Image 1 (cartoon, helix red, strand yellow):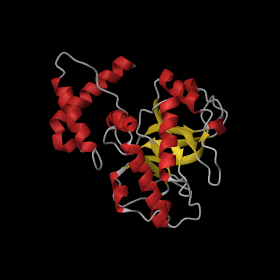
Image 2: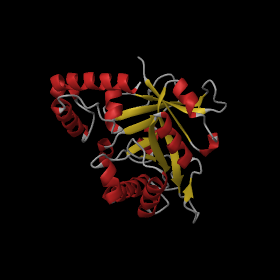
Image 3: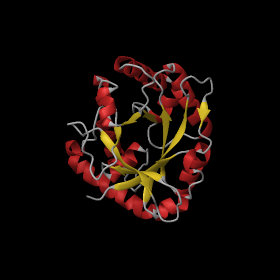
Image 4: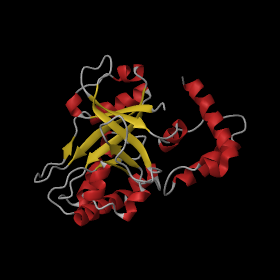
Amino acid sequence: MTYIKGVDFSHWQSKVDFSKLVANDIEFAIFKAGEIPTGSKMEYADPMYPRNMREAKEYGIISGAYYFFHPAIGASRQARHFLNLMDAYGWPDLPPVIDVEAKDARDPITISSVLKAMIDGMMADPRYEERYSWQKPIIYSRWGFLVNEVGNPAWLKDHYLWLAQYNTALTVKPKDMSNVIIWQYTDRLRLPGIGVNLDGNYWLKSREELHMLAGIEPPVVDNPAPSVLVAEKYKKSLIGGEPRYEEFSRAGDVFRRLVGAWRKVRG
């Protein structure tokens, strides 16, 4: 199977050459925005986030932003900090990502509770609603961590997941893979022309689904009604789980043709 390729990185990789990402067929990139370290009063902003967002836009790479979650820090403070960073330095194309891999010596009930409160705080903010509407933040983690340390809460199934497992196959995963959209398969990706390791990722759904989630619209044609109809049906189908093309297969075929034509025009 051929996957759509993506990367993620932060200030640790310094100034990545985005022209080399394009040359290596990277279609999406997700950047660290910041965090509030446990035990610190400092609200950390990744110093490379503004540049990375500008470069992604300039080179036509679909952008994402992740925030390193700490269950020991107040949920409302973390939600506000993440939103402020995106508001100041760039809103990503993809829904914001919450990076869940820190325990901070908290139990699963506490971790789940603080995480859910942070999500609710973000979605209640008008700035988030204006840009992402009903689309919930993406959750990044390892599946084992979500099960054992977060308790695999019922509300998790309403979120898209970005799962990490450094292997030749994603084997530690939920039985229902419908909401797993990205697999981080390595933290040692070396691309020609880039002298540092990047995290390598595969998009697990279709290119159309990637574009729709990123808010990329199909081209305007002489009779736009079909594309508008399809886009609206497609958008509604994303709520609460995997996009369901089969529910409107005929319209879906029209949409796919429109996206294909648009990609040729875009180059």
